[in-house]
Length: 196
Length: 225
Picture 1 (cartoon, each protein chain N blue to C red):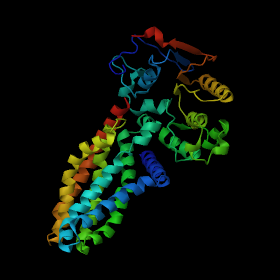
Picture 2 (tube, each protein chain N blue to C red; picture 1 turned 90 degrees about the vertical axis):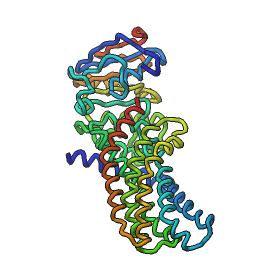
Picture 3 (cartoon, rainbow over the protein chains, first blue to last red; picture 1 turned 120 degrees about the vertical axis):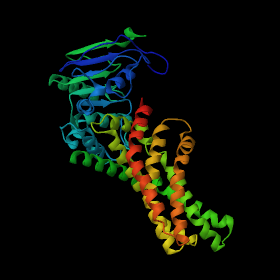
Picture 4 (cartoon, rainbow over the protein chains, first blue to last red; picture 1 turned 180 degrees about the horizontal axis):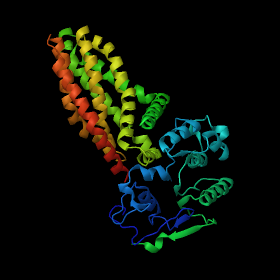
């Protein structure tokens, strides 16, 4: 539901370890609302979201321990620099430590800018920094809302590689994107078909 | 649990660093406080006895308004840039993250106000004993202002004209703090012990710390839905 308008109904799916789910649909069909509902940020009018067969609202922090969410907004504070931002993400993220912030920035080509206040970053660089969160804290479930927005071709390729690596090592990905993806173990849900 | 404490510490550290780098956030309420207090002698005339009688009320009202002025940005930039979502889906109780945020807010607004007060109380002819009580009452009272204000700030997130709405929501709730705060100073000035007033201020702070973070956390979740 968005306002008084139902967006989709009778939608049901299950995601297993090592799978990627690509949600597609025209603008305004409820992709972002669906992802936010899956994260527990929005409430659905009906139905529920289960994590390991338990409703997420009954689980408390166990679900959030497993969840990475990169939304439309990059969740970057403009006054801090890239390293400080990632160190904060590590603190707040819980979960298992993974790559160090320096390695993650190197991987995404942000190394030269690591001491620069993030408000000076371009859209694409901010997006990369937001995605660097995925690298510094290890979590099985990634929910990504339009992760490729503002990224250049090379970085899109890099991200696709990252996604397939994550899926190959038993991770789970749910993403929305208007790009055509060619990744292994991926399924597509066309949200338009469930239009209410 | 030590894990939790280190998260709170790093959240406070981040908020303080951000505020220090965006120094207008700290300076604006302080300058506002100084100007409002300085306007009164200009308006009512420099009669020392009159100023001394008015001083507790004037200083407290000014501190209250200055705090209110700063409430808007307690959550707004995190709301706009998406960090607030990340706090809600962090694997820690949101209530504790709210306590960290409110503490940082107090460190950057309430505490500077307290530190600046002695200067302004000289301007209003308050004697040393009354100034001491004033400082003590502000030290107990301003955190309460931040905690109560956080509920209003969270409820009005993302609304147009949120600033005015915050004042309408929060100012009525600030009245007990104003009454006991200014009351404590007036009591000292007339030679009565301020202990009763200060104890009540302390009780209000304890209540605010206990209940408002939960209300704020719920309001934040509603604002993000």
